[in-house]
Amino acid sequence: MDEMRTVRRLLPPSLNSFFLFGPRGTGKTSWLKQAFPDALKIDLLQPENTRLYAGNPERLRDMIPGYLATQSSTTIVLDEIQKVPQLLDVVHSLHETHPQLQFVMTGSSARKIRRQNNNLLGGRASLRIMHPFLAGEMGPQFQLDRALQYGMLPVIWGQRHPIDALKSYVGTYLGKEVQHEGFIRRAGPFERFLSLASFSHGSLPNAASIARECGASQPTVQTYFEILEDLLLSFRVPIFVKRAKRILVGKAKFYYADIGIYRTLRPKGVLDRPEEIEGFCLEGLVAQHLRAWCDYFGDGAKLYYWRTKAGLEVDFILDGPGELWAIEVKHSAVVRREYLTSLRAFGKDYPEAKRLFLYRGRETLVIDSILCLPCEDFLLQLRDENFLPFRFPV
Image (cartoon, rainbow, N blue to C red; front, side):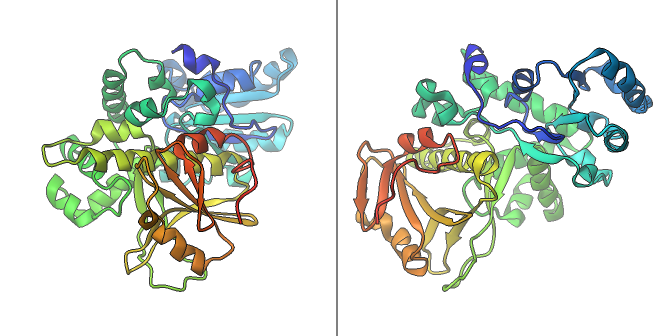
């Protein structure tokens, strides 16, 4: 686990109160220690703290005068706030009486908070997301092949036996957060769903088909997908429809939040083509990087994909202030002109778009004003607000 301590995370800190959500093992606690070393921390994962504050959330209010009288820091960290969501009412009140206080509220799930109709402090606290490692954070430590095998979760990266660690992570995490919290009634159908959903990674899920195979109703399967998203274990990429000039498909693509999770849950059989799985891994790795870049530096940028009824598809569209990017990902060591067909079509519909083709080769090429870039080089450059730190070809 030495790597996790030496990697400088790119998530910018905030001077105001904020929620910090992220899956377990993404390094929220380590980042908070570095960003707010003098803060008062209340760890709600500790059973005694859970019991203490669940039974008497007003205790937090009673602590404040003594804390302010003896400490120079005005930051209070409430770790795993979803364990005692009643504390949010107290925090809301304290914002009114002690505006100098900064509350940092972490969690691995917002589901319980939303189910209790809490409005996340009515806009008084911003929402931040801690993602798995970015290649740009790791620098020379980043290994693309390792990332494609084991993912980018900090809690996994430094393990000597990452496969065993991933199996334990998936089993323990889902056991704690799903079954213990009572999000589901029966574990069996949900466990089957997790594996079946892996076949939809990078694709459009068919809830009806998954429901038949896992022995649950279609509404239940829809709830399962919502649980994964609430636990930050998955995300969806919607279709880009602005100024559409063609008939487009309308569903969102599904991704597990980390490639290591996807590989662990994805069953493998004799009929599976290794190159197909590797392609979904590379696409998913790029997706999680783009999503993190949007949250850290994107200034309102949103991630989409583009697919026409005729079968043209661009993996990712990044729509941000003043810029539009179309990005295609291919697990190939060479660039063939037919790989660029969809990017060329998108360029005709959106001539202002910058088009990027990411592949496993080593050369940087420009073909039909499309920049073809080694995927590893691109991932390493996602480390600040400059999406690509060089002049784009015209």
